[in-house]
Image (tube, rainbow, N blue to C red; front, side):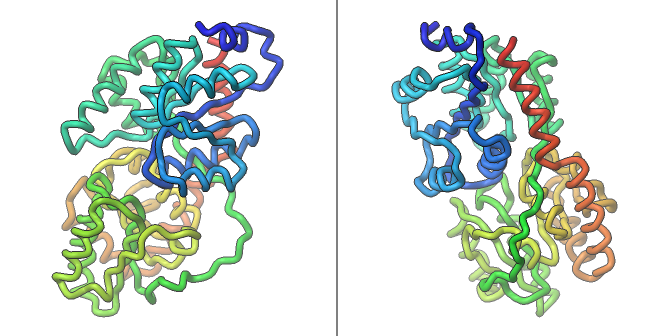
Length: 368
């Protein structure tokens, strides 16, 4: 164990516990939004070490007042850990965050938590990453695994991860700000359905486009919007243009002021093939936006079919299309589901209560 870090962990610990988040990311999505909110709720206690990511992502954290340093390799990570004062606890996010955190825990004897936001297993490399992640979670270097959904905890139990390590801590939202609402300039008129997320295979934007094409053909006044960026953008655009619907199914890219966009939607559609606890679902619940979704991952834990949303079996596109059509045709149903969803978000997915559970987990893990 490094002598300086060993002293920090075994000394009197009068200084506050410093939470070091290890993150590698391609942009500001649900995981990153959750982490930023988490850091802001207890200012001064968290530091983000960015293992890889665009400048815009780093700027979002820095502009919000969160301490952030770039650590593109192990040597720079070791330097940051050795020069950080006070008792430390590592929290690895995603595959690279877990691997670098595991190496740091092994080298310096630091306590390590990994936050598992979900797994993507659509290709061989991703399946290998999932297997390695699960095996690392079985080792003593990983003291706790925070899973954002019960389905993720179940996968760890099936892989042989000790039950005492597993903690289901769903994402939560802070209370809404008093910022005045306004309809985005780029938002088409109502009726409007929308997709929000990374334009990548696991999020199912291709399925949303097929749904939107079908419903736009049935309803001449309907528009649709995909909010996000990702590797499928060109293919999605080509498919939309081939159907002659480029003026009604829009891809304006990533957008700021997401609450305004959500309020502009008549229905938020989640066509994901896999999920954890999607932040956009919580944001829609808080904004009062009706939701239709595939019941995958942690979504059924968050929303009840016919209670707070309309859910369809995984990848059953015909059924999801029917559910969206129901919502478009029944304003009273949209309002009822949205009202119930808002209450669920406030009672079960509110950041202040979730942050207290995190605080307890951090203290227990650092004291083990």
